[in-house]
Each structure stands twice: as C-alpha cells, then as structure tokens.
Length: 372
Image (cartoon, rainbow, N blue to C red; front, side, top):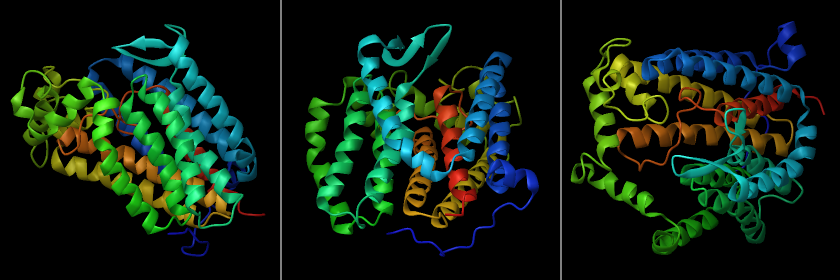
C-alpha cells in the first residue's frame, strides 16, 4: 500500500499561535490529555510523588523537543536523517563497552545519578527516518534489493540492542523500519516471503539469540500456572487486577493488587493493570479510544503530507506508536509474552517519553509545513 496525497482532507489549525508554532491542535490536545492521565495513574501505581515529579519533568523536556522539531521543515529533518542514524548507531555500540547497567541489563550511557539516557530509544526515530530518506531517493515501490537493504539497516541496530539485552526495544526498532517500507508500497509477495523466512528462522533464533529468561517468558505465555510464584507471577497478578476491576472499577487509589504490592512493575510495564482495576473495563475502553484517536490523527497527517519523505516518516512513526500500545496491552492481558514495552505516555520512563514526544513533533512538522 502506498500513501497518496488527497486521500483525506486535513484541517490545519487556523488560530494564530498554532500557525506560528506549527502545532496541530487536535493532536496536541489528545497528547496532553494522555500525559495528564498518565500522571494521575502513576501516582496511584507508585504511591509516591517522587515518580510523578520526575515524570512531569521528563514530559516537560519531551514537549520542548516536540515544539522544537515541529518548527523544522521536513526537508531539514530529511537532511539530518542519515547523521542521526549514524550517531544513534555509534551510541548503541558504545553501550556495549561503556554502558551503565541496572537489573541485569546494560542499556544506558551517562553518569549514574547525574544524567543518563538510553541510546536504543534514539534508533526508534533514527531507523524510520533513515529508511524514509533512503527510499525517497529511489523509485517506488521498492524492489527486492531495496527491501533487503532496508531490512539490513533495521537489523544492525536491533541486533546490537538485543545484546544489552533489550528484546522489546529491538523489535520496535525493526517494526518502525518495516512500517516505512510497507507504506512505500512493498509487494505483498515480499511480505509473505518475509513471514515464511521468519517462521523458518525461529528455531535458530530460539537456540542462538534468545536468552533463557526470554525463552521462559514465551513458555509462560502458554501456561502461567505452571510456575505461579515465579515466571508466571506477573501475568497472573495483572490478569487478576484487570478482572477484579469489573465494568466500573474499584475507584481511584482503591485497587488491592497494586496498593498491596501484589502487582509487579506497577508503575512501568504493568500500569494498565492498575488502571483496569481502578477504572474498570469502561476506563480501559476510554483510554484505548484516546490511543486510537491519536493514531488516526497521525495517519491522516501522514496521508496528507506534502512529499513522500514526510508521508513515509509520519506514517511509520504513527504505526510504531500504535504497536507500543498493542504490545503493552497484549502482554499485560496475557496474549503476548512479556517483553518490557511501556505504555506510551502512561508508564514511568525517561528517554522513551522524550523520544515519543519528539516523534509527535516530527509528525506535526509534516502536518503544518504544507508549502513546497
């Protein structure tokens, strides 16, 4: 499928301040609402203002990044795509040698307690931008050789990130790049062939790439009750929390699984279980509808981008955002393995929060810079 101009009409904000700041008001309001919901949920999940204050500070940095990137013309972003990809790749390599570790993983650069960031998050922007830059310099739809080149450009940073280890982020980097290739008009024959190759390569990945705890997470997906006090604990407790919320929930700060610390990682990966327990099925539906509305707005902006680069990049970033949501909700509800993917703008995070908002800044740049 190829994104084409004129498929949908995009209403660019007409208010003076929005025009001057190159902001898409509907998208900005939805992102701000989601961020506010996240701060409220984070206080309940963590029980501490410390996390809320730190998250608010990171959101502030992220919104500054959004504002700055929204001012840039998409042609400027295209010019910087290659340097950002290369610098991000260098940082990811540096992590393997001088990175800072925590909880058995080495994923950060910087000085502990002063300033730290996760270079792998940069590649969630660098990889799709690089592929959009590469593809727009060639005739579309891409041929087999171009698809292979794009796949290699995704797999290199993903392989390095897996070594940290961080399988969830590696998969998102691959997804962000493949979405760009898909939107460029990649043949369904290539997609089908790629899926068959992935299935055929799975035994080798299982034996040579996946670590023992990652294998255990996959096996636990099929039978969490086999080890209810060990590997199955997270899924069992999250399903219990969501189920106990019923239709309307137990009320804010009234959840038992989270407030009594039965639910692990409640302020990060499993925060949606906290919301399900406290606000019930109705609350989760409202949250998912807000996510869908943001994704829909992003795709409308992508379809109406002024050039191929903007359409591919905005579309790829929007679909990656949606995958964030799908994977997190899927793993918390027990239909996907636990891979450590946070819920966008809700889970407590650092670099991931800033890069997500930076991605929306790029999308707004595509939305508001319409003149060639």
